[in-house]
Image (cartoon, rainbow, N blue to C red; front, side, top):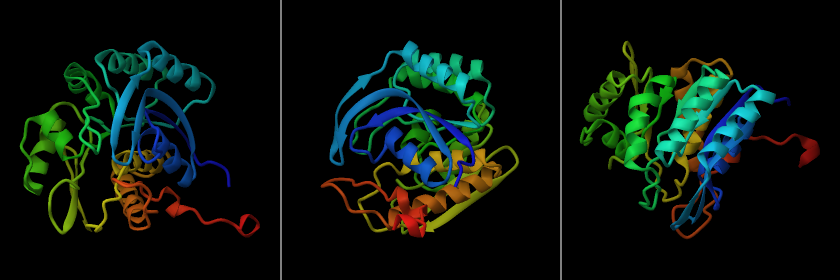
Length: 270
């Protein structure tokens, strides 16, 4: 099997392998595409929390993006953790230089254990300059609240927040509903002319580390292969739900999902 597309991932590293750029690479690979990376930060963490975050120099992040894309032009870009205003500005300069049209932004702000992963100044620049440059933004509920100022308690609030993101310049929005306490998980997709609520049963597990990273990477992969952005969201959600359902139960805290759920080995590798 040859890769169907080429994805450049701009994100932080997770030493435990369940989230961040490790989860992104696993997702892109398991869905049949080729993953490249620009590491924005190195985190020391495990399933129980983040111990420390080591920032990569903004100019070196820019160099990773431009130098990689100069040789292998990506079909799409997934952007994850951007921890400082200088990083956001350098990523903006980079994506304008390499001219890739399909860009998915997952505005990573807080780790599963509660550690803050982005500065307030970076959030302001992200809202003002980056949101209008991407094809889709995929915040979870806490991130959507930070970006819009809307207190989200139900699906109607998610829709209100989504429309506020559209007013900020977003072309398409997918607000992930996993943080609401309900038997069903409702993810809201919308743009100026369309609204779709994806409804799925909640899986009874604590092993959901890296679901946001994995979802945005799955969407990027499907989008890069020619699916519409709405269909890519639908397929990405299905992939992540399957990965949660078959999670390997690793770690003593919030364990990883099963990124290999989409892979079927041919006979000679068994």
